[in-house]
Each structure stands twice: as C-alpha cells, then as structure tokens.
Image 1: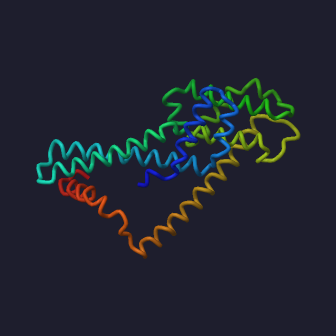
Image 2 (image 1 turned 60 degrees about the vertical axis):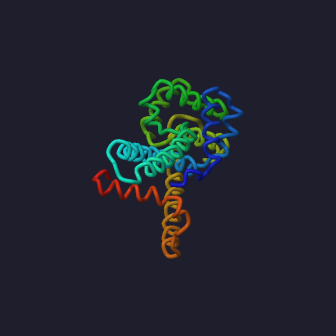
Image 3 (image 1 turned 60 degrees about the horizontal axis):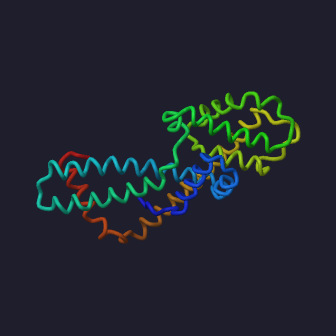
Length: 237
C-alpha cells in the first residue's frame, strides 16, 4: 500500500489529539477545521491495513530467519525487514487515530471525559435554551460512544465543530440530546456518502490502470514478491 498517501494527515490528527488532551481550544479548532469525514475514514483504513501488513511481515520474517534455508535467504530477510521498517514508520505517524471502540477498550473513563468535554464546549457555545442537557452530558457522552463505535473521536470533534459553525442549520428553539444525536446521524450519512464516492472512484481508476498496464515500481518490489511466492510454496500463506 502507499504509505505516503496524505502525508499531512498524520500531523493534523496528532495536532487534534494533543490539543484535545491539553484542552487547547484554539489549536483544536484549527486542526479540526482542516479535516473532513473522508480524511478521517482514510486514516483509520490506512492504519488497519498497515497493522494487517505488519502481522504478515512479522510472520514472513520469522519464517525466513528460522525455517528457510534457500540460497537467497539473506536477501529475502533484508527485503522483508526493509518493508517492515517502512510499515512501522507509517504506523507511528498514524498512531493517534483510533476508533471509539478501540479507545473504550483501552481507557473508557478517559474517552468519556473527552467526549463530555467536547459536548460541554459545544453546548455552552450555542446560546439557546438547553433543556437541562447540562445535567446529563456524561450520560450523553456514553450513549454517543455506544452508538458510534466505528467513529474516531475526531469524527465527533468535527461534527460538533460543524454544528457550532451552523453546518446543520440554525438552532432557534432548544438544544438537547436529540439535537446532538441528529447532528451525528447527519454526519454519519455524509461520511458514508463520501466513502462510497471514493470507492467508486478507486474502482474506476483501478480498471483504467489494468487496461494501461502497470510496470512502475516492479523492480523495487521484485524481491518481496519472490519472497511471498516462496512463502506460498512452503504453506505459510
């Protein structure tokens, strides 16, 4: 996979996470406003793909070090190790992005603290009757975590920032939990639409690439491909 894709994205995600941890609202707003639902989805997808690649490369490296005795053993080890190093570097850059489900498994209390902070900031920003919402922000934070496990917390940041900017329309009556949940549903729909459009575009590009042929980068990856074939012959994949 292309580990250089969206090279500015890891820095934006890191900035957003650090700003949230520090409760630095100006820096948080600056970082979040440069994100889109699709950029966040891409980051999560890239991280999961990289993690899967790392598992495969670790198994490959172990095989070539401990079991393979062919003449090109050292070359295969070197090639796989180089690929593993590249993947690890890319994972480190994207390390701040996680789904809400992953964050809940790691530290549920901190996750709910972060969500509650974001909710309180939004609620206090929007100057309308609040229908008692300040009394159950923690409960609402937990409901959001349970209802949107596939989101990253950056998704919630972006959705609430858009709400503050009037993206989901003006609020004239009152602000309550149902309004917040409606914002998140609208955001989820938009995000899914962007993902579908991206996938269609990828499929079209892939078909065009197959028609034109792909020779670029073949020499650089040749050893790794041979290593994969060797693994297949030995029943490792």
